[in-house]
Length: 394
Ligand SMILES: [Zn+2]
Image 1 (spheres, helix red, strand yellow):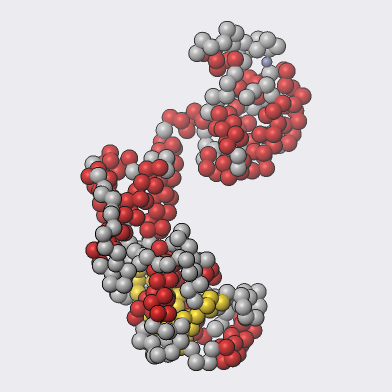
Image 2 (image 1 turned 90 degrees about the vertical axis):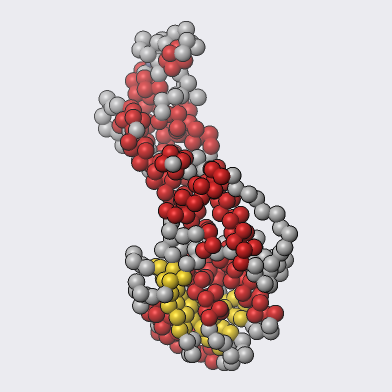
């Protein structure tokens, strides 16, 4: 069994994508089980997991201390009509983080009095500390604060807080104005699409239901920590969370996925540090970091081959009987990549230039030292890659 868990976290991602696929189909399963009255679509065909995947999935969920039922599912939302409600992100003067708090809070009050004097106002907040992830809502009639699964991101928490307010608050028959300090959550809702996070689609569906009941909902972004009393209140309620606060077990599949991805990278990293390759290759930024610097597959491959000394050279080829002469004709030494880059007399002038650009002082360095200079940052890497063309390698 232990072996199987390991297999879930290889450095290659396709397996995780298949896990993600499994999460998705589990969400669909959960959705049918719940039998949502408004969006139930009978007769859909769901994929069946093979036993091995199902077992791995059970282990994954156990490790995360959650069950598939807790994954945020989505009522199918008609994406053809993305304008679900009014969302104000930068329509008002006070919606500017650069302004002093006093200006934001006073302009906010003025704004509310002019534009939405009859709206029922709700402020929501999602919060994350090292102990708790929590959601809070506040209106003039009610308030709530819940703990949620710590794996959820602040983004998920912010959106869940709005969902929960719509579910839980007794709202008079009037239009609703929801205040949130999460620009990313509100922007995501504004750009709703099939690819939006599930929690956003869930919120969209809730707003859609209200709309069908002729209740309009507007969302207003308020810069965080700017003295707007509504948001300050929601913020402080969210921070009052404790181990005794009621717990809501919703969890976002996207957050599970990014957690598994992080875990996978961490395990790969740990395995590398424990392996013989670290002794051979040394301590360099991983190829994912490097590929962000190069941004081009050809360069990625070149660097990976330089690091692992698998660049095609006469010296390397002759080890496999693919080249008749392993020696450098100029220096009479084994003509491998370390000879070419570090010692070959043919390249002495080029080397002098690169060494200067990479701040290498000593003329006599090892391959590891050269790499540690070349891979120290993006700038050095690019200089190194560009000058490689003056060496006779490919
Ligand atoms: Zn040579």
